[in-house]
Picture 1 (cartoon, rainbow, N blue to C red):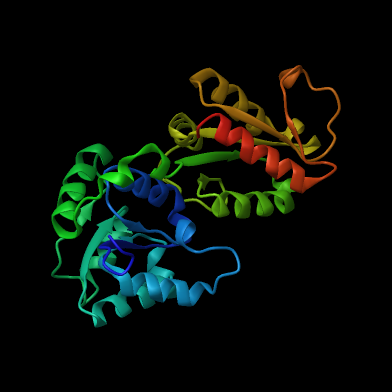
Picture 2 (tube, rainbow, N blue to C red):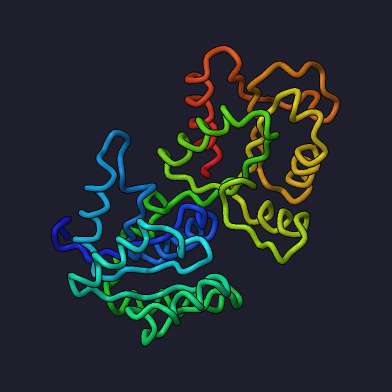
Length: 277
């Protein structure tokens, strides 16, 4: 099947909903559905706006992720309007109460049946997969292990390490990993934070702990490390600043970013691949 003839599904979403979208893309691709997802499709240095417009032009279906975040995204609004102009099929996906109200109040979408992911995720993803297979078809080659996306990783860090965190986010995006972190990702503000973190860490493919003196002093980062170990989520320790002898991670291997960060990222990439994450 040539690139021109591919039937793609374009994902339109707010970057603040990365956590949900990363999981959704992983599951749909694993079922053999062609997904256009900006994190995977836009190469470093490529013109972002032109790449998005090309993705919209090649798509047969647009999944519109409607949430409290997408309401305020001008780019999501632009993508929706552009897709409607070319007569494509739009499937609204609701992930919170504000997202539902956004659909009901939008003249373009108010009469369109939406998919409600506020309920049990597993009971909703299967009907969506079947509907997309009927619309865009199924490519068995995408179900092979080498074509699957890599899931998401949980980022554990102290606020003082925000500069390195920014570089780490770019690295993950460029290598096809979604991620969840406290600052950027979609949050459940109706749940207690520790309960939300338990679920996020359990479902993550790995925890990346950014080691520094601030990490050592933070009660949250230590707990996130210990809980990851307890539930069997692989932990990668990334040392970005010297922190001295630390009992909780004594003897545990780490990746050193203190001298040559590029070498650290290269090693991290190899270790993630070695673990088949």
